[in-house]
Length: 401
Ligand code: ATP
Ligand code: MG
Ligand code: MG
Image 1 (tube, protein in one colour):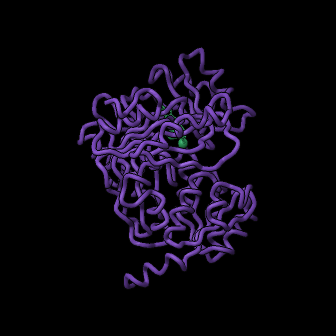
Image 2: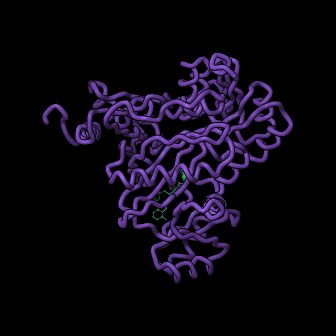
Image 3: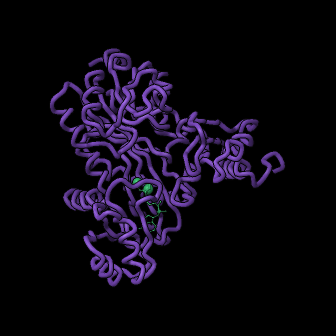
């Protein structure tokens, strides 16, 4: 196929997205620039953050098989902005309708279950004779299994829901053997939630790598970034990560090796732990654009959102390189008091800053802990970007330095 035929897919391939939040919105913004028609499936339809940008929406739940089928009839490719969708329904739609699904429903199902995800990575790494290092983990069907994990690894340990988790909701730290029973019952309320345990990772930093995979299985990785979580929620991202070049390269290797084992095209966020001994351990994978990749919108030649679209529409992948020396991102989270005034504080500080780009998702009203927007800053080096980040957080005046 010649290049012209290939780029024509930009406006002839209709894309459907399950989920209408901010990730879908930024995907729709990237699509608009390329002329890719996007339809959103979300309960708020055209009134969702993504629906307001795409201008096309199906109103309904992205876990409702009938609604997924309705979307499938309107588009050529279906993708997701959230992994907690009905993967079985997606697989059925993929088998019965003339629609492609990226990443594949099998990949979404695998990643949805954190225990299956880790078991798959262990097996795939062994089969490929590659190393995808992870901390120890085990299935815990009952409290006795948690206690025996504690005897093997010591405390604290992390108990996690296998499915449905986000922003740390679904995780519980088990500080000692006497905590095991209450942690187990707090997470498995109703007895229907399956849990597993992870050995505590005393990481020195948290890292992330965005990896994009095309339909032929070729991958390209964005630089390794450092992420800082507050209350288990992404707070800031610094790109590139301030760790050794060897560690940055190892994180990119591990992330790319993990995504090479998955089926289907698209962008993936790979979360990792930088260990004090220099090792890099994989924490978890998201089969979609990721908060740790928002900096790419202003700091890279091609953003994570455009590269996701390029992958699912089958255009050539774009460059993942940074076009500036360094960058950082600050999430704008709904303030604890729920007021718009308190929530807008970081934006008020950013709006006059030459190096800052403000992204506001237009969700209303702000709710405590809700992701309302983010701010990217770019600079020539990590030192300047660290100053700008401090200024955004209200802890210094960048002009005074
Ligand atoms: P996300 O919003 O990224 O999907 P999540 O709810 O899936 O988050 P995890 O990524 O499993 O949760 O964990 C949230 C945070 O808890 C991690 O970013 C890390 O700070 C901490 N954490 C997770 N696993 C461990 C571990 N085994 N040891 C120590 N800390 C951990
Ligand atoms: Mg997660
Ligand atoms: Mg996580």
